[in-house]
Length: 145
Image 1: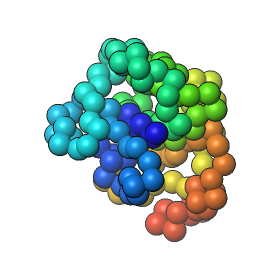
Image 2 (image 1 turned 30 degrees about the vertical axis):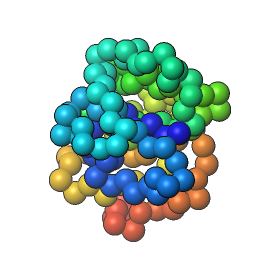
Image 3 (image 1 turned 90 degrees about the horizontal axis):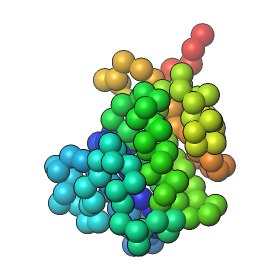
Image 4 (image 1 turned 90 degrees about the vertical axis):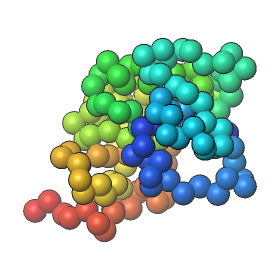
């Protein structure tokens, strides 16, 4: 089971074959309510998750609407509640949050960066697992010289 705790950023770029997994979206924005397995989620109520879902997810994908520590602490609380032992985390935030991400979720930055031209900051993915695809540089992102 993969749970996506997200704003629309990752949802726009995510392609998953749902024939092989259960994919659910936890989101405050009702525009996504037509998606299968949508659950209204308010990060200001991080533990307001049905008890039968606690510690049952193989993977969470986290893309909060804000990059602040306060928000990440709430998303961390939700992730810890949802993840089964040994569960995987894929998170999206800015590079400057690397230390905080390690502290809160024990995740490391990946080599692959998403290409999101309209954003001011360069976002980075963080994981607690190895991934061949995320270990490759995104050719859409220019090299810093």
